[in-house]
Image 1 (cartoon, rainbow, N blue to C red):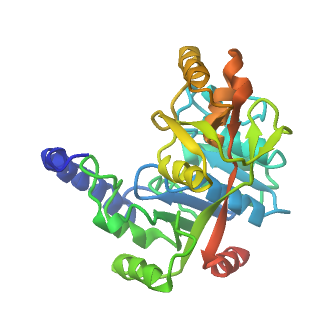
Image 2 (image 1 turned 90 degrees about the horizontal axis):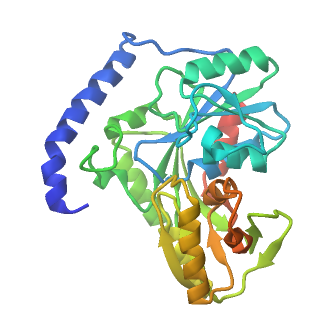
Amino acid sequence: MSNTLKIVLLPFSGLFYLITGIRNLMFNKGILKEHHFPIPIISVGNITVGGTGKTPHIEYLIKMLAGKKTVILSRGYGRKSKGFYWVESDGNANIYGDEPLQIKNKFRESDVAVCEKRVKGIKRILHEKPDTDFILLDDAYQHRQVKPSFNILLVDFNRPMYNDLLLPSGRLRETLCGMKRANFVIVTKCLLDISVQQKQIVIDKLSRYYIGNYAFSTFNYANHFVSIKNANHKISLQAEKIILLTGIAQAKPMKEALEQKGFDVIHLQYSDHYAYKINDLEMIEAIHKKSQTRYIVTSEKDAIRLKSINTTDVLNVIYYWPIEVAFLSGEAALKDAIRIM
């Protein structure tokens, strides 16, 4: 966004400041009700819009809580349905949303549900799954109708919040005073060689708003690509010319990671949660043939949406690149905090 446009939008950011400030004050004073529940609820969210890595961190927590009866609850952003659904692994992203369906496909032993009204969703879960040990709330930091037992706030290292503005001039959903609700802050998408000094600069900048536990994480990309048509078909990374197809908030790290491994990348970039259509894939197929690339690489989230399209041969040459969270520091403190819940 240009500086000129940011200035033009500043009055609207002022209005947004008033609305969010009054809303948070009403929750803080008890005028608006926060619902408490009798089991541990862990919320994972952010203050900035888009692309801090919520889904991979939810997946990390699922692995951490292995052996526990864990239910993941999401609003199912981008879905065309309304209300409460239990996510089925063979379902459609239009019904469940891409991220909940991705989680269910990777963790079939875990129950995943979607409901735009989180209080209603939690009550339904506890009624139908009374043996639930934990509920993980995806992207619920601003959903204050639910009082979580443990609030994890994600901060993108590459897009520092302390240099940002409120919507619509910037990317902040609320002021940084909202950090005070966090029980733990994870700085995500860090460089592997991040220094102690760089970490301390981030902590010093944010400590005005939050004093507590910090962790620093990064993404590890797999050493193979996986076919979106057949999860058992994997190909090892071999540098060559490829098409990168993305409809995610922050595609730059993925593109850079491919280039660092020697790939010659043609990037076809769509908006976050983009609903691919057959004519999109026909165009992509034409580019694929013209560029003489051997295959197309996409993200796990894109793969879920693409699999919902039941036609076109181009799907046979599309592979996704799995990622997982790796902690650079602070992991032990996070595990200890959750262990005592």
